[in-house]
Image (cartoon, rainbow over all chains, first blue to last red; front, side):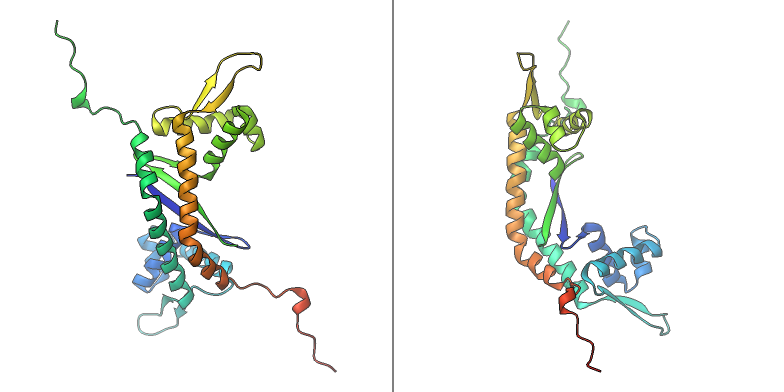
Length: 125
Length: 125
């Protein structure tokens, strides 16, 4: 099946794609940057860098960290982080819907190798 | 202004984005792979490799080369190449339309540094 992959470019310069959005979703789900990173085979350091990249794009945080407590604090999305995830997924859904007919028509053009059982029989001797 | 950047992933494996589409458009415009490559600061070899990548994705050509003639042949899009460009741009337009409100709302969230002339005056001594 054909599919779309989508990035948002914000002025003056910051690209947000499916990887960053998935990371934010996992931070929301696990309440932890390190757990979210682990779930995406990513070091804590890398996960933190990606969050910082998004913070820098907006000039304000998309994730807030809670200090201390018995479980050693945690992380959750700010209102902006939540809005970003929600709007990105909404754009994806709307774009996929708008693109569906075109994607199907292009996928039909992809030539598939004939499956082995469909190979023509050699002519009878 | 915020904008979308979009890629199409075709099964069983081939990604087509704005760069390949622009190359095909320039081949159509110039009637030449090398001229199209030059217009995109790309070697003939690189332009040809990209065309071949798209041909491989579909299992059939998106560009056809005409032999000889006084001007040494040329290149033009096949019906498939033309359909690919047309559908990709149509998907882009539809997606941009569907995304416009969300993009505008996200762009509003981007904090801009205050312009120099708006810097507060130091308090009077």
